Image (cartoon, rainbow, N blue to C red; front, side, top):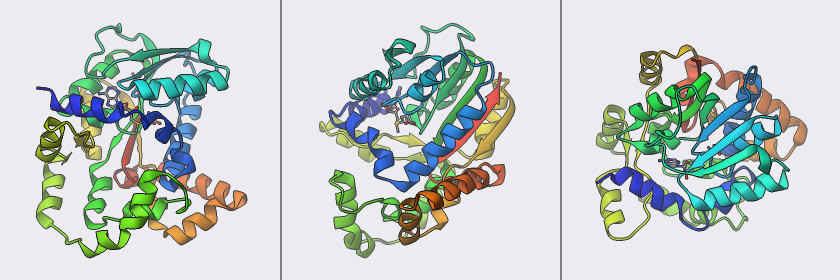
Length: 309
Ligand SMILES: C[S@@+](CC[C@H](N)C(=O)[O-])C[C@H]1O[C@@H](n2cnc3c(N)ncnc32)[C@H](O)[C@@H]1O
């Protein structure tokens, strides 16, 4: 049984997913930084791009952005709540007529022809949720791309620090008083997470060597009717570059959105984010720092790659 896809499908089809995901940049500072970085990269790489495939497009953060730039976008996602939210937001932005919504899984892109889209993109880790098929999925995304490919996956070097920091997400909470259920959980459980923590070298070595977050426990939860977080495959930068080169992608540029911001404590991050002038300067500088390929692995969760076909 294809557990990974089934688990992802159940998790992302939870009814409140679309609403919660659409509020991420109003809730978490790391999401502000990462999405700002991807937006800048996209807008800098739109020459010759008229048709776009967005795989795992979510609530439309980037499909709507490119439709607003005049592109025709195929918004593809495994989740109906995400697509419903994206449709609502696209209507508000006046770009419904430029977006085709398709419910489907990245594991099957056989409906699309070779080089069908000028740009093929997929952001914030949908590819990582297709384990154990992630390499084949990248190959399929490259196959349907005519000019350019741009995507972000979970980063192994970026994820390993979580194993020594169970309260990492707390660093990026914009407002601790918000009614977001996960923010409330993080705030209420902070002391318990610290008190109950002990570092496991074995767990860190395992993630470093096999790249997998999740596995048997998630499968057992799924079998009992639960909706665990997706089994996630995390990539090393050289591994990802090698896969893309193997599929013939040229001029590969990699970056690590979030690498600079993760060094800053929450007290300072929230100060910066609530002052518009500082926020602009900080995001400008994060973009410059995080675009350096030497930090690409240490982008917070994500490793971003852009290449030419
Ligand atoms: C973290 S969200 C990212 C959304 C959007 N790309 C962004 O950057 O804002 C991940 C998205 O991937 C979708 N997804 C997960 N597994 C998928 C799969 N196997 N095929 C297609 N979409 C998938 C989820 O439904 C969700 O909308």
